[in-house]
Amino acid sequence: MQTGSIWIFNFITFTQIRITMSVVRFSISLEEELLKELDQYVNDNRFANRSQAVRQLIERNIIEKKWHCNNIVAGAIVMIFDHNKKDILAKSNEIQHNYHNVILSSQHCHLSQEICLEIVAVKGKAKILTELSDKLISIKGIKHGKLVMSKTN
Ligand code: NI
Image (cartoon, rainbow, N blue to C red; front, side):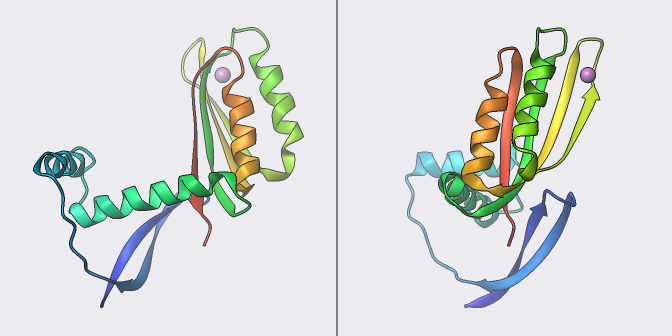
């Protein structure tokens, strides 16, 4: 066992924090083709090494599994939409008011004459945030929507 450190992105402060913890080394056997894909993934995402990429993949997978649970997580819901589309703003506003206790802040940016970007910072039970995100993203006319969540501890 050795001591290493990892960087974690904090979605609340939008800064990276360094956490020092013990690191365990182990080896993985992979098919050559899959290893090529992993190296491509490392390159495409500019990871420093394979370990960093594998760590991120494992963490993402585990966090996604926790999305439907009672764990407290923080994150952001990002939406792109055309504000001329009927009722989007009114519907989004109504849904956000229903979930006011998990919404930390929201930011609306006018990207062009028509297109808006909305970023809603959230913190609460993963399943509630997923529920809120599903409701917002499924509003008719939302071009793109995504929820990102991160552990708070
Ligand atoms: Ni706008």
